[in-house]
Image 1 (tube, rainbow, N blue to C red):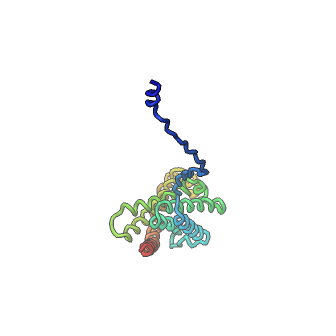
Image 2 (image 1 turned 60 degrees about the horizontal axis):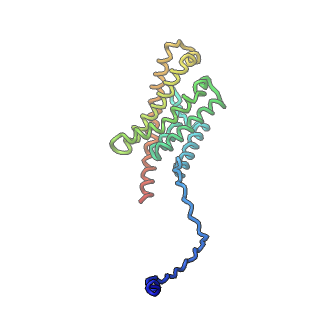
Image 3 (image 1 turned 30 degrees about the horizontal axis):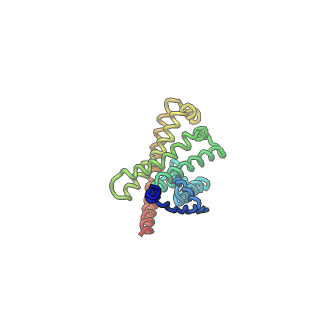
Amino acid sequence: MAKEEQGLQQPEIATSEQPTVATNERPEPIAAPRKASFMTARELAVSGLLAGITVLLGVTGYGFIHLIYMKATILHIPTIIGAIAEGPRVGMTVGFLFGCFSLMQNIMAPTLMSIVFLNPLISVLPRLLLGLIAYVVYRVLPGKAAVRIAISALVTSMSNTVMVMGLTYLLYAKEFAEIRQVPLDQVIDIIITICVMNGIPEAVGAAVIATPIIVMLQRTRRGARK
């Protein structure tokens, strides 16, 4: 029996434990997702350039065209150019800086109407919206690019006049009447007259000046991509 039990015993299988090898390798850190910047380098550069042109036109006086009966402004044209040629972010940035310049100008060199333009709702907000208006109007219009640019410049320029003068009437009608020394009920007539007499020449000037500049910029950009 003892021999049979020894025969039934299975031989032990020798197992060799492989030693664990320590490594100094560390897992690579997971890169955090990069946040998209508000503006590209090109947009930032163009915004700075157009804003600088706006300030230069305002400081030197070249941003105002003296007509027979009025002084028309072209300070809003760089905003229109930036919005149509480079997009709404550039247009709104240039418009915002244009509004800030107008606000600072009325602080540094006040006039009778400075009480109106010291309010950012009048000096800054309409100019900020110009970039958006110019871009949207240009995008939604059908037809050739030159025609769309001209119409967009016309609409945007008139919008600037209507927004500024409309907010002036809503917020400062009484002060406006005192400055002009007219009855309060005549203020609305004066506001409408200014919108027509100033707004139309400024809109035409914006279309005439902005259209060839934007067309040239668009052609140059398309040529650079080829």
